[in-house]
Image 1 (cartoon, one colour):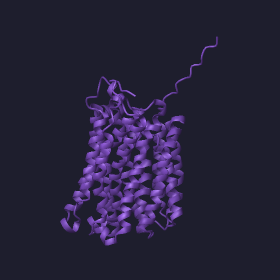
Image 2: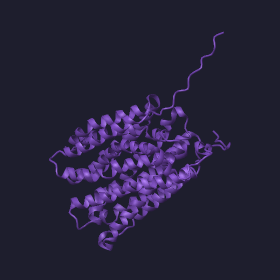
Image 3: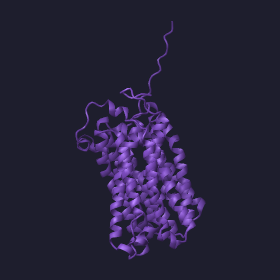
Image 4: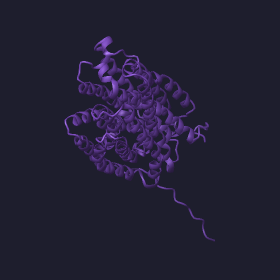
Length: 434
């Protein structure tokens, strides 16, 4: 395969694999913070607070990363629309990796006082900036190389990256948590997963070194001078609709992977290892189903899959919290797995859907800003809101179910207002009958 300059480009499997690997590494960096926030950061960096208030404060620093992500999508989107998709992949990976390693080096509150949580906020902000650029670059480099009729399939591989990153992040937390005493884990064991991010970032840079620039970008003769300004001026309604549409997916994912971990370990007395095992098994299932849902998106369209996923999520949130409240591994796994199946039904096709909604000259900025604004709406506040709702509810946190159901219905309405973008199939020309 050759690009528009006649330069040989890597095969689609190789492009998809490199995008998946880099996305997995960057989401590892982002998720390892969320797991640490649920387990240990509250008491180390906010020791003057009660256990509940400390957890809420740790989740607040977690939310800072989401606030930074749209800013990162503007910054790296400008680079991607002006200079190409490939530079985004390198810059975002370096920034996120360096910030994550630095988190593992921050002394606790007992050593440097108020500077400790302040440093956490700054580094979490930098993590969010990097991740805000990563998604747009990884998705576009894959989607713009892929054949139109298989775009959802190939673009789904970067979407598997978050599942891989989550499992990897939790495995690196689970190992020291299981092998060390609570005192040793709090003293230094929680830092090991953050330090490992440096090695992973170097590996990701090596994997991405063979990628060539997107052919769609190379075909552009006229690049937007200020892509974000053009997106706001001509595509503002589209950005808001996509952000609202994606809010449910973020809320569901972070409710079951971050809030549920804190809820089960602190409120129900479930061991860290058991709860992390339930979550990781469900996330593995989600990753395995991603290309299957993407194939359906190529066959039946992007919008029908998204509408189906939102509707399923709205119907499942109350059963999910009831299953979580049992504190038993199998029901908890089933509750989380059902939520993530609804999630993947809509998010497997998003990597193809969002770029197709925007014209190529502002695609990197528009798709990334819409995607990451959805993270602010659905992901930043969900662990905080769910923790507060569960604390003031009864045995079963029905308030959390109502919160997640409401967001799912909001996203369902936004998806209903978006158009279908699946490319029309190429008609088969029948040979003339002599």
